[in-house]
Image (cartoon, rainbow, N blue to C red):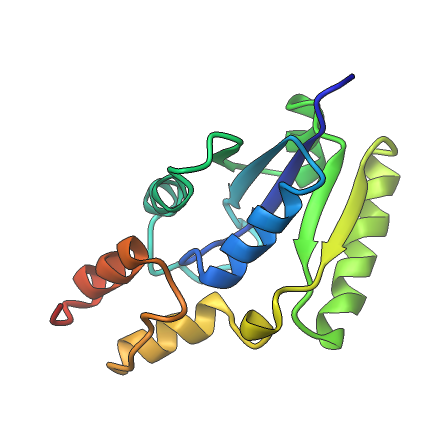
Length: 165
């Protein structure tokens, strides 16, 4: 049987417990997940963490899971998927408001690469409100984010923001 490999693309700035939940649940129906950090030329904003830092954080968070790899990519997701012989894209949907954009992207990706399917996963209800941008904002304002990120990510955020441990 052919190995079922999925790609889970995103910015992951930083990787949160919600992202972890999606990846670990995807492993219930695929053999391997590639967490792919996108370089976003279409968005002028810069992230809190450099791309390489995000990839390293993801590798550390999933260090206990050999079926998860992390990398970065430039350009179209479908080109990355095709180049890596991936036929499944995993996307998380936190709210109904996410669906319209994600649905449009899924249809466009399938138009560009007919062999790809997108699978939408709803996060655990404990993470349905969680986003990386909220985590960054709470951390920057000195709030406690320990429940939203792994300990390694928490320490990285504290170092980045020069917050006490």
